[in-house]
Structures are given as C-alpha cells and as structure tokens.
Length: 156
Image 1 (cartoon, one colour):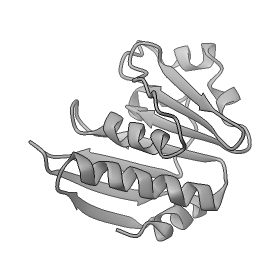
Image 2: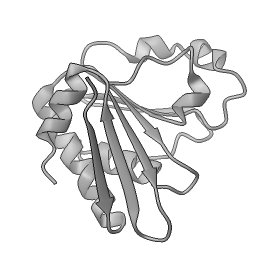
Image 3: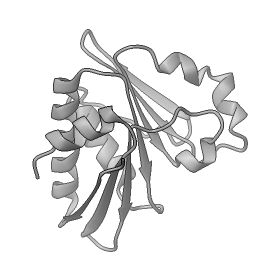
C-alpha cells in the first residue's frame, strides 16, 4: 500500500534540506533504489537531485539535460541522474544500457520518467514538485517496501 507524504518547502534551502535528508536515509538503507522526480519545468527537480548527490560528497553536479545521464561513483555509492526531457523515444534509454545502471547498490534519480516509460524500472519512490516563486509543494509517494522504509526515515 502506498504511503503519501505532502510537504510545503518554503524555499530552495528547504528543498536542499529534503534532498539531504533523503540521502542520509538512503545511506542507512543501503539498497538499490529508483526515485522518480516529476514536475513542470523549473519546479525544482534538478535542485533536489543536485542536493541529494552533493550529500554523498560530489561537489560538481551537472544537469544531465543534454547528456541524458550523469553518473557519480565512489567506493560507497553509484548514483545515476537521468533527465528524459529530451528523449525522442524511450528506446534511446535501451541504447545507453539503462539496465546496466541498476546493479546492487545503485541509485537512479529519473527526471521526466513519463517520457522513459517502457525502458525505465518501476519507482520505489516518486517525488512530485510544484509551486511558484520560492515556495514548493512536494508530494512523496512510496511504491515498494524500500520506498516505505526510506520515507519512514525522513524526519522533516
């Protein structure tokens, strides 16, 4: 059964705090994970992903808008940040070997997942961001027991 958490994020700093909290919980869970990031252009998907990735010690975080995927790896973690916005066909994800990015201990952050349907793995967690100006609404929905465990860890 899905668990849904609705949050109001007052500003970009609050969005980064959420991303850092999620990252800390992921460190504790230490499991393969797929997170969908949904919302309109400018809703804060990349800000959330950047904060999450930086929480693992990666200072330089690039948007994968043109490259489709940016990977961040060290001895502790394998994070793959996908941006499906520019996909003309979900088969493009098969060409880059998207399934190879889902081994044990790998995390996939997927922006615009609806454009990759058929090629991407089901989500453990979906985060939908919306809002105008600085304030954002975040709706977090779990889809698996791993997602539930992650959401139960978040303490906001």
